[in-house]
Image 1: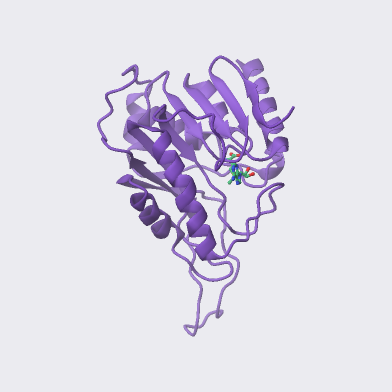
Image 2: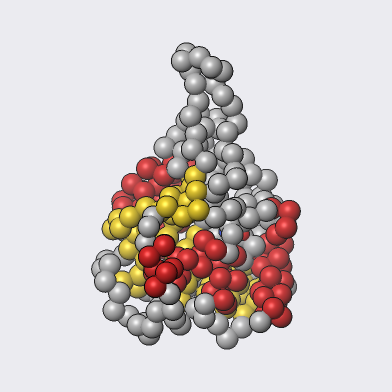
Length: 256
Ligand SMILES: C[S@@+](CC[C@H](N)C(=O)[O-])C[C@H]1O[C@@H](n2cnc3c(N)ncnc32)[C@H](O)[C@@H]1O
């Protein structure tokens, strides 16, 4: 299969294109963006160089966020899964910097969810071991920064929610604890667990809404959309990851 629409069903589409050149996303047609962009920590992706300078990485982030801003409806929302800090090749406040960039692109800030990945250690070095001379501190968490285009109050869509009272109470507490996904199980170098986009969809979108993941990877967001009856579009530059996503969607259909 060539570049372009890789796979479609009535409610899902995988677009095998570059986020910067695709023309397949309608302007103001998206209710919710949920995504985890490349973190620029030298992950070995098939088709993306994850070793930009930090300045280049911030430029890349601004360019793709501007596109997402155009694609969202006026009351559309943006759930951005990013690291809090980075300490490989120089300390950086990635979470703070990308939040500032999102605001520069026009987004309004709502809140930040801290995802406690529990069993994951992000530690790559101690700095000065057991000495105050130059110790390194790194928290084993990631962020889901929640932003919106123009109005936080959501008026478009079916107005039908499918979140239970217990889920609402638990998930509006902005410390989420669940495990990360195993790369080897999925066959992708940096998948997030389906639980992450699923919670975002049930908390921040209505049944039948259209969700976009512009860095779809192995398709976790599309699997979550299938589970909660949202429509979903995924953009992914690498055809092999599109294959994995298509297979996961087929497996999910068989599970039902
Ligand atoms: C952190 S991974 C996303 C993983 C995904 N959340 C999952 O669960 O599998 C980022 C993805 O963005 C893709 N990517 C990088 N640059 C891209 C671009 N310019 N356009 C579209 N996809 C891109 C990479 O190939 C990679 O699969």
